[in-house]
Length: 178
Image (cartoon, rainbow, N blue to C red; front, side, top):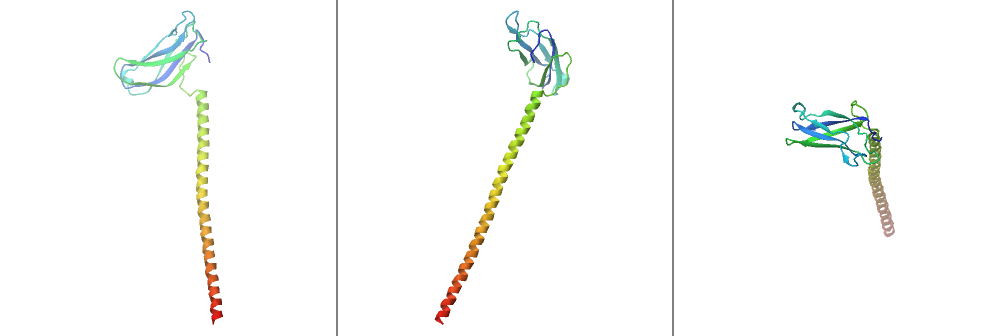
């Protein structure tokens, strides 16, 4: 979906920081047809992690109206960066941009779900193929063992026949001398 000029949007995300007063800044960074330059023409977001939310994930949001002069023929960037006065770390996840002024619960996009299903199907195919290859190798090994046992049995049988044959020949030779 293309960003529409002069429309209300909301950016929401889950944020975590190990430091009180850690801040996240950002917004839509886009070209303006009137000034012909890139900037945060649709407003800038400032979110600061308060002491009671340190070391916990919290959902934050920023509602804004896109600039009437947003140039949608050029790239529009959603930028979120961290800046802090005290030293520390900050993390964000589950980012959502919606054309609305109401924040909704984060859910994966349809594209993420399709990719996830494709990943599951591909993983199952790979597992099945590996299982078949492994089981075929096992069957080949077991088949070779059976064949080896049969070969050894045939050799034993042949060896017994040879011994019986030698005994008969000796018996003939004994009987001819006697």
